[in-house]
Image (tube, rainbow, N blue to C red; front, side, top):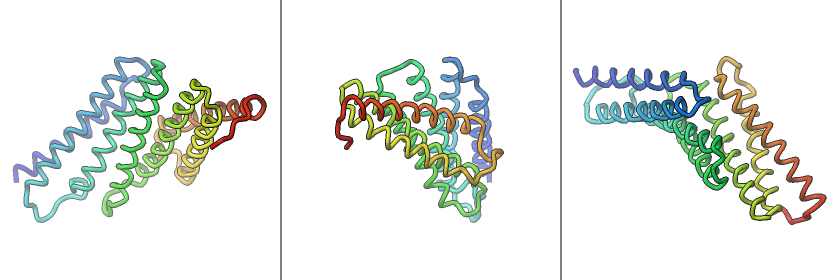
Length: 221
């Protein structure tokens, strides 16, 4: 079936695009922009494959080409692309409220990928699932961290502490969620993100707690 061959080529194209995105030098703006575009293109390729599979009447289909699997991989690619938006906005020191919203969307895409992957019965995804679960929690933690900065700017110190309490709890949950994974199962960039997030949030939390306990004495909601 020629349509089957098209689906396979599209799937391999998505894999190649995602690999190209993952090796970009994201330390500079051009590399970050290129990675974002490549991840978006990979998601688009997977969407095209899904359309081919949906329109076909194959009796049997490889698990990787099932609608559920394609939806999971697509959500994963969109999460990676959204991470690039978040990183760029964070580096450029955009308004905290904007960066928080970008972080929330990253978390939601990873959550979607996790839900889809949990429904897959015949696809090897354990390492990906653990990493996606961890990153969903981490970026939700980043969202609370940046929202806390907005509260601080508005002199809402009790709300700031509450946000950072939640951020610290999520960062701790993220670390616990991958404790059973081997280091080889957790990508190096995910390990770096975990360490950076935990350190930044812990420092901000300690400073906010200290300021409220000794200076502002606001009720923490």
